[in-house]
Length: 59
Image 1 (tube, rainbow, N blue to C red):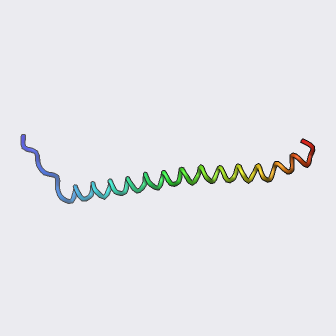
Image 2: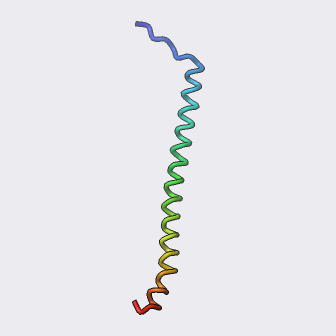
Image 3: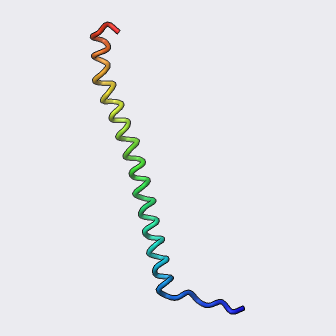
């Protein structure tokens, strides 16, 4: 059975979809890293605020 070559428009569309998928994955990785950093900063801030309160209350 003879195989037909893909239509040039389909090849171009698939390449664009691959590019978009790669960009989405890259941005998702950046969001994941940024979220982790944000949570670290929030935890550090909370400890800095709460620690003096605990020390000052005798606990």
